[in-house]
Image (cartoon, rainbow, N blue to C red; front, side, top):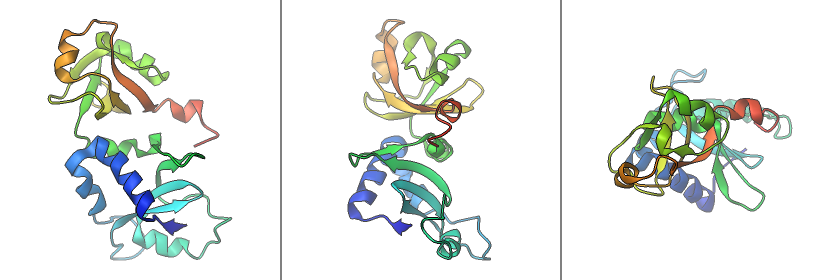
Length: 187
């Protein structure tokens, strides 16, 4: 387990900024509330076996007593690097993204199951979308009862969604909570 280097930090922050925007500073500067120490410090990012973890400094200090080959996980895994070196956010980062999301999409109850099976969001299943969402922005997908279901990338802007056909794709799927069942071995 080691700190991220300059290139890795840039890739992680760019991906998080896509979903959180200026709220990224709240994630980075957030004081830690977990850990055995009285003053656990701040949260930070660490790389272990091509996975990026978000954890408190107090837990990291304690994890240094465990050998690298025996350490399975420390903190919340927010993403991983693929074999080609591309950083991808994983579904475990949903709680972090949902708390600091800039753009949100709410689904009708009939479209929730389709999204949880890994399909894109169609305009017919869209209940609400935040204003000023542009194509290519990262969005967090919610149910109508404000339960975060996953995240994706907006395929159309808010204005284009109003004019679009009911079968037009509004949000391209990236991750959803159904992955806990579908990809259980990999998580």
